[in-house]
Length: 212
Ligand SMILES: Cc1cc2nc3c(=O)[nH]c(=O)nc-3n(C[C@H](O)[C@H](O)[C@H](O)COP(=O)(O)O)c2cc1C
Image (cartoon, rainbow, N blue to C red; front, side, top):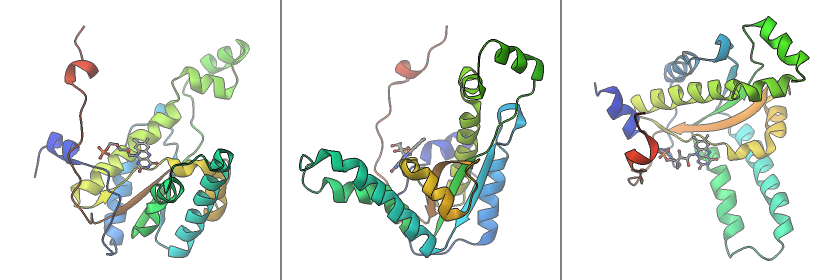
């Protein structure tokens, strides 16, 4: 068993997968890892939906590519050759994975009602309070997704954390029958990697870390 640093450092985003199904016990393992993450006020403010139905994936792909086209319309003929085709590919490669997780953010809780009521009396609304607390609802989702990615990698699969599909989050909610109270955040295709990723450029340690 490799040490944790080796596992974390060798995880890479994978965007092409072999056509091989993923057993249910592995799916459960990934989710158990995800939901073990810390969350602000232990809110566990997440929902994961496992999608294996190609028709559902097709509908999500259509929604995302339609949205990309409508956003890019404003550029008229100014786009470089092949840009639209390659952009559509980059936002929709998840449809070719044998398993795709959709990640939603549910309502986070606060542990200190007195402080919250004081903040409201100071003029903060719910969104303002969450922003003041550095968006711990979103941070909690990030922690859960990273756990999931590492569990996927540990089991020999690959995945890619994708946020671009959030451009049509409301439609994805509708397609998956998830209430609008739960905000779509990410899509994560998972499968056996169909290639070995190239090395990635890392920032110098002194640019990202120091003692003070
Ligand atoms: C919050 C977040 C959102 C991302 N969204 C996308 C995305 O929409 N599409 C994509 O291809 N990759 C996406 N990525 C993957 C990054 O491009 C990738 O993590 C980065 O280039 C570093 O490469 P690595 O994951 O192989 O280490 C996302 C990563 C993170 C953390």
